[in-house]
Each structure stands twice: as structure tokens, then as C-alpha cells.
Length: 341
Image (cartoon, rainbow, N blue to C red; front, top):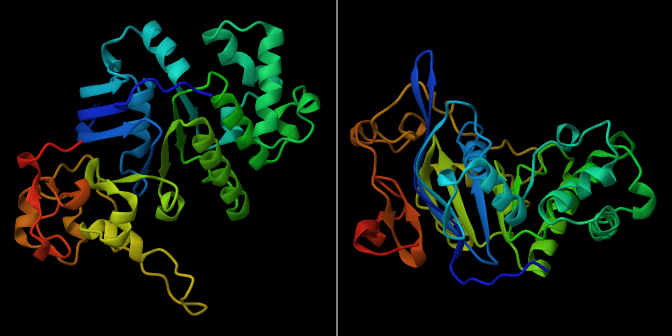
């Protein structure tokens, strides 16, 4: 089991920003991102394609595109990751963080036995011998539900289905017994039934090993009931952040409400037309001074188009950035007057 020795947050992002030059000028991909992931807890990051989810994960992992400028702080167990030398950063992240990417078809090397791919990080970061690494790989294949793991150790990726490949990627992410597991759209390429199996597996492993977990998805249904907190991204900004149950029960930002309304409901009659969000996600090259969601928001006022709303905090650390939030009669307290994680 991974050893959790500290009681504070394992991961903290403070005033994080990411900017990349383009032929049309600087692209502000992420702006003023603030959140923490506590030990033994789970965070869901949701938003449409282009919201900045994957870039946020890449900034944490240190695998950003060449030329990307990162501002603010990214701290893993108190260490500011961008300040570390590349070798030091790889060593720290390799031992402390495991990641499962979206598409197992491209994550696995088709010319290398899956057993060798699983054991590689253990040999590099933990100094395991080949025999020790193989034993751990077979054990992890058993844990993630691969039948005949000792035999499958010598199989190639093409001999497995998409769901089995993703289970193999989960096994590879667990070799160093990380304190933080990141699943970046890890079930998007899978069918619904296999998707649930993989999500249940991730949740079970996270709880049994008392790891922290970040679950990234464009689907609110994926994080519902599986995370302690939820962070909603739109146009590179955090528009809502708080306890998952509270955000689902009482969304305050119009974008979060729109996402929830677009989800199919079990009690809807057959062939009910699903609700959609009109318009398109913002073009990062078109930098607006107001709320990025204003052009698509039915409740937008002139102020929304001109002034970026400040982050506000309500009950239980529920934060949102909206000039005219839902249930505004609750009179939330401005964030700067309270010390909120």
C-alpha cells in the first residue's frame, strides 16, 4: 500500500496560468487556476473539449508543448515542480504520480511485451531487479482483472481488447505505488459497459490503497458519486469548484447548470430530445475581457460581456465565478474575505 505520511494537500495549484505563442498572438490556455487535492481524496475535473483539462494535467506532469509559459505554482507534496530540474522532476513524479491516458491504443508500444512495459517504471524509479519487477507486474495484472496474468505477461498489446488495454495501463500506473493517480479521460474510448467497469476498478483501487485521485472527464456522470470535489473548467477558467454533492445539488454557475441539464435522465420518456448548450466553446485566440461563457449564456447582461466575474465562495467552500449566479438570494460571501483551500 502507498504510504501517506502527510496530512496536508498532496497537490496544490496556485494562480496557475499557461500561455502559448501563436501566429495570431499569445493564447491564454489556462488563467488563475487555484485548487488542492488532499491526501486520500478524489477530485473531478470536467468541461467541454477545449476547456483546458488536458493542458492542466500536462502542466502538472511536465509534458507540455515546447514554448509553453507556465506561471504561478504547482506544488507536489510542497515541492514547486516547475522549479525542479528535469531529472529531479521525473524522479519525483515517477515515484509519486501515476497516470492513465485517454487512449490505450496509443499509450502502449505495439512492439514491446506488455509485461515489460508495466515493469519499466519500477526498474527505473525503484531499482527493482527483473525478477522483482516481473513479480510485481504479474501481481498488478491480477489486481486489475487480467485472466492468466503470468501468461499474459508475454503477450503484445494487439492481443487484448480496448478495455483490457486500459486495465494494463492502470497496472502500469500503479507499479511505483503512487500517492496520486491521474485518469485523464481514461474511459472516453471505451463502450459504456466497459467504461463503468474501468471506473469502478479505479475507485476500488483508490480506496483500497488510500491514494489521492484526479478524474478528468467531459462527462459529469463519470465524476458523480466517484469524487469528493469537482472543478468545472470553461475557456481556461475555473467557473465552479466545490464538494461534488453540493455542486450537483446546488449549481451556482450557469455553465454547470447547462452541463447538468444536458445529461440524460433515467426518468425521461423514451426518445426525449436532449437539451444542448447553444453556441460553441470560446476561441482562445479571441481574448475577451468578460465572462468566457457570456456569449452562450441566456442570462447574460452587458456587465457579463465586459467584466470578468470574481470568484465567490458560498457554503462548504463552494466557489463560483458568476455575476448573476443561480439562487443569488443566498448572498454568498466574497472569497477574498475568507481563507479557503
